[in-house]
Image (cartoon, rainbow, N blue to C red):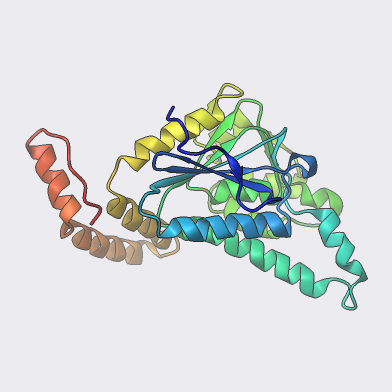
Length: 275
């Protein structure tokens, strides 16, 4: 594994998020174990700010989102939300703000023109499970668990449902949403919520290794491919093929496609220029 170019440190103390750079990989680590890495207002803002900075940073080619402590993320900070019930509107405006902010952050992961990989070491529930589902890829510890238990406290996991239903077969997603039951890491792999399960303590390393493998590809090709993947998934079959054909045509005209195909024919390694 590559060594960090700088020591791990809070982005802005006392930020609940750590940022580390390992070569061309940005590692964002949720670092609020006392709150089980809840997606508080500060945590959401910190993740969103980092993603915005990474978007146009040509030195960063992939992102890993990891966490410290026994939980990956327990979801929204319920104490933070409940405290606003004393507002004149009983918290309605703040609740709407938080749900919209969290949803925007999840979409920022999807729209980031670089691959994002979750490294899940512990329990990921509610919006924490949503965070895993929103990442492009996910590696989990064998001890990790996943769940959407809002139903148990009278709060259906409606926003996590959006990401879950786009990653997991409908009946499996509905089972998790309706029962609140946790699923194990091996089961999460079976239903498509995570890509791989590794020995406990190895998930971060495995996620970084996967990120480095992906980062060796053309950044331009990764960008257009990720965007096309998510756009076509919302289209009808005919529209998806029409759109994908246009994308491939434009891709064929790119310098990196010409170089990559030439390198394949000539049996040599390609030299990407990311354009």
